[in-house]
Image 1 (cartoon, rainbow, N blue to C red):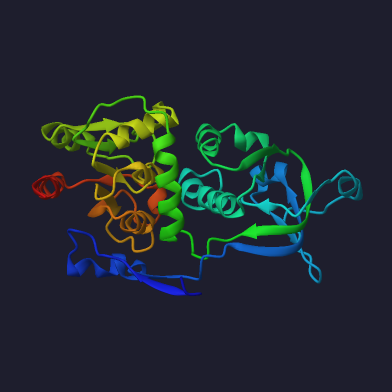
Image 2: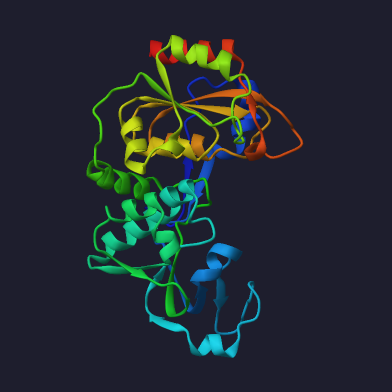
Length: 326
């Protein structure tokens, strides 16, 4: 691959010209290259503050940036010293979407390219997260090193996927999930006509007219599933048993990663949101058929992530009819 490549995405299956403002910024994107390593003179990485302050402090030869407060001399003396190792995590690493589209591809790429066992330094609180521990166990050539205190990485290797968040290097994504998906413990062979990712009314991004909406789901035998009630393997069993995943913009749509190529993804989106295109981008990267419905929200003065959605059930049913025709 050349040092820089511009990728043009395929538009949604049910794209309308009047919606171009929603997708305009996501149609083209750049990949800087396939090299994801860059060296730093030394990096002070506080594994405890990482969770609280969401910061990593970088120290270079000529410049020092301290973003989490002053470092006491006693703390410097007690540092764990780590030589020539990789740093994979940042303040988004605990997020399900960012873990599977950014962190795990970095670790997989480095571990396979190195052709030897590499060390993955991770705090215990992060390693205890179900989907993190289990997905790491599927990767080849890695050694988990628990580190719960501040560490000084000398000649640190910083991993960068060369694309902005919400964009993807197709090669890294495809190789990773082709490798790990067959290894995930299969808990069920049940097939589903479709899966809707349900969110409780007390949670944000729930459906305000769920009674009318669920009637349409039932009419087409689409199962409504609250992923938060299930283990990671159970969630994957649901999505691998269907070729239609439906959801309001949110991390549950990340599970399209485990569906067969050419599956259908229907995202229920805020009607004025031209910023949150990460699932449109992911669906096209995975060669899924991406469908969308633009929806009203409770309050247009606040973020998409903090809103509840009202679904036009007649429009929704029309989209389902089109999906099942193809």
